[in-house]
Image (cartoon, rainbow, N blue to C red):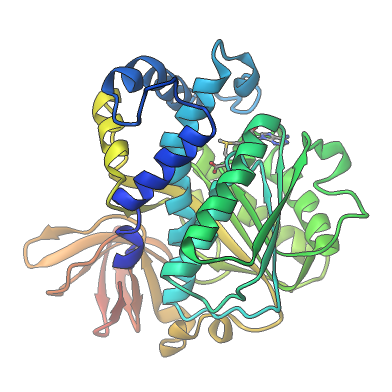
Length: 410
Ligand SMILES: C[S@@+](CC[C@H](N)C(=O)[O-])C[C@H]1O[C@@H](n2cnc3c(N)ncnc32)[C@H](O)[C@@H]1O
């Protein structure tokens, strides 16, 4: 996915200064210690980054139940939170902002009177801050005023997240953004929200669903119930999850289950907007070894590059899986006008990198005709996430050729 330059450049030294001032104010650094201290980072932060990385990348079959109550179980919860805040929060913030930018580049415009957002499993409000950054650097015309509800089971992280969100959104110039915190553990036996909860028009879950012990098939009706009751007409839902095979397949299964459940309820007001360009059967799900993810690159904050070096990790490019769902009666083309330029059966998204094969580029595409390996002769540099408009695929699923001189949306 190509991210607009102002967004990919928005996490340089100014952002680093903001982070540094914030953690100092929060007393997360020992006296006389700064974010520049390699010794402190190596001793107090890196071990927690490695531990969290291992937890989040867990490969066990039973994903959610193998996850300990990590905020609570730590020997040093303060440094664990600091490690998450310094390392994982900015990455998820940037991923979320990139999804917003994808909506923007396809012409999505969204003008409710006020943004009424809710973030589940908010941690340090990474998702909410990602929306603020997305709107600042790749606007969809959202209103300047926003009220957010942050829900999180860890109180210390939640309160810190709300304070960070206030600082970050103010710095971006979003002065009319407010947050309310709800310290609670969501119990799905009781649904996502109590009946008395208000309506929202922006519903986000960032790296949260994979921590719930529930199958996509059981999750879909719960989500539909919640969106029935608490998502406004013209509301948006953004679900973002890790790019790992198991977790990514779960979000693909969830898409399938949502579409089935909506059909069962004889409804058609939920449009799965992105990344798929239609409601077709998922091509990746057909092969049990396959999955689907996006990837974005950015100019990391300088301290994060240092953390990467110290930890032997690399967050230069950030993979993730996601779904954007829109509650609307309008058509996909009305909502994403950039797609109007080609009929639905002539739109394909690159779902892999492209590599040279002779004078062609080869990649996998996804469209109404499923997932296919395809070649295209073009001088343009294309990458995962780009969209071909007016493309006609000839040949079989393993060796197609893109014909029809497609327009490329990068
Ligand atoms: C991986 S973190 C993601 C945090 C943040 N959304 C982000 O993208 O950086 C998952 C968060 O979900 C919270 N969480 C998991 N299960 C929860 C539940 N049942 N109720 C409330 N919060 C939950 C965890 O405490 C944790 O802070």
